[in-house]
Amino acid sequence: MTITANDITALPAAAKQILDFIGNNKVVLFFAPMGAGKTTLINELCRQLQVYDQPSSPTFSIVNEYTSPNGNIYHFDFYRLKDEEEALDLGYEDYFFSGNYCFIEWPEKINSLLPEDAIVIKISLTTAGSREITLQEKL
Image 1 (cartoon, one colour):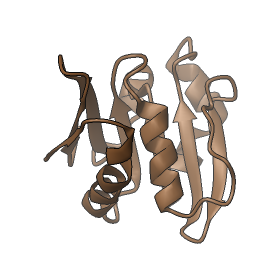
Image 2: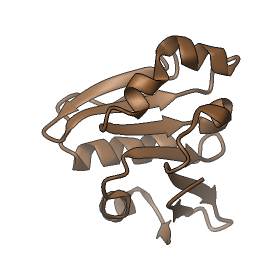
Image 3: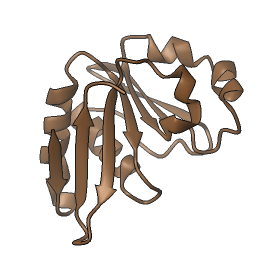
């Protein structure tokens, strides 16, 4: 499934489609180049899930936890990881297998630790400046 977002006003509708696509598989991997809008899209997903807190990029903290009526939501940014050992030290399994939403930026940094049944979202920039958001059910 592919969603085109021509500008930021298209994000609420895109987020709704993504949440419908995700269903019960709540580990979601975001693959995209720097500046493509991963965090912005995750913020909109959190808004749709009625997160009580203000979502922000976990670049320095690696993981942010948000509270919502849908349970806890974990937002990861593995960009700064030097190796997978750091994710092991973080206790990633407790998060990934908690049954809660886990939104993961830069999952390629922990490739061998990712659940095989995770939802994959790829964001690419078009020459017209829009975003193509491609959804896949597995890695």
